[in-house]
Image 1 (cartoon, one colour):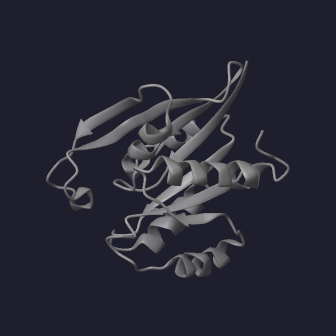
Image 2: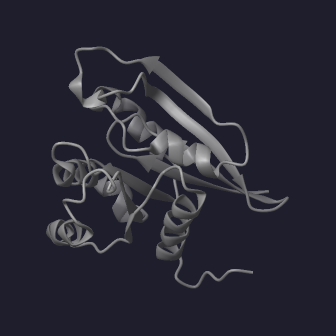
Length: 181
């Protein structure tokens, strides 16, 4: 049986848990804890991921993709290295309504730089319906400093179509010779 492992990361509230739940063929395993009033980055979130989110996409009887979501808070960064071990690629979700989403992207690209060098990354920008700036063009400009040109999309983490498109873009970046059967 062939198994593949993809990692979802990004800041708290970017939609990692939601995206995994949206495309998983199995009930998602989550490790959530109540948020505290002392952390304004959570807005109206009642819980945050403290360990991981885990779901599975069944490609066929013999193949499946394991989906792992990292905690978004830096205080749980010890999980990031654990979860990326053996990973095939990275999906980075950025919440466009946060205070400085471009800096969030820079932070996660720097933090996961060695993993991205070994694999690939695709970037999904969430909540663009709430905040239209920065634009996708602004993100592309910021990416020039990293000398990478990953696929980047405006996505709704609740939309199976959007999350599937992001996942397919990552898989295509990993192997441009892939075709649909």
